[in-house]
Length: 268
Image 1 (spheres, rainbow, N blue to C red):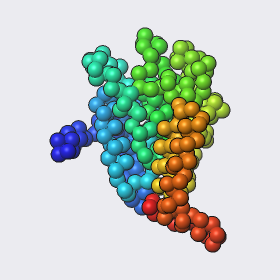
Image 2 (cartoon, one colour):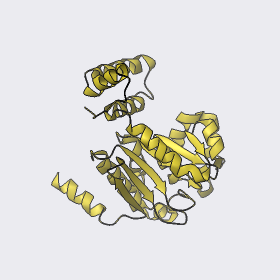
Image 3 (cartoon, rainbow, N blue to C red):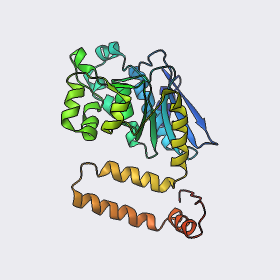
Image 4 (spheres, one colour):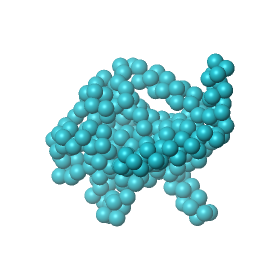
């Protein structure tokens, strides 16, 4: 265990291309891509992002995580040179690192403006909520490099929009504007560019008002049953519902409902 902690500390000694801000008062953590102007994501950065997500998942002061970026663009993608220099074994782990928002038990919001290409799009797809703006362009442009998405992009996208639209995006390296992404169900919200921060803050406040235990349970259930047959999914939902029935948060929610007051959830 000490070796793992030491390895994580060494890996995070100097964050590469991003920073982390934690607001205990708001119960939120912001992972901010910060390599302007295009916030290109390096190989080291992918690994560091995974460790940061795992650390924030263990931090009881953090209820919601936001992934955002400085400047006009979320990210134009990964470091192309890094792919050439990396071994096949290293490259094969990329999807695991980028999937860290999905594995995180807490709600994760991606605030996207401008270019959201390649790994920037894949990282956003691994989040629970994507807020786009009128300037947002989503794309998986790997075909232009003689390659395919390698960090879960095409697979996650197909789950959301179906095989036809995914082929249209992946095989043609098409750029999808934020409004169209919202219509297709890729983005959960589309706002004016100047309203991105306001919309993100509002969603954070909304999510924090719910029971953290119920939020974690809902996220895990939905992730775990995405590919499950209906009968198994319903069975798992029933077990999850049953466990929450004995929680203090459920009791508080019921009492608050009958007393016509706002519930105060503790996560127990």
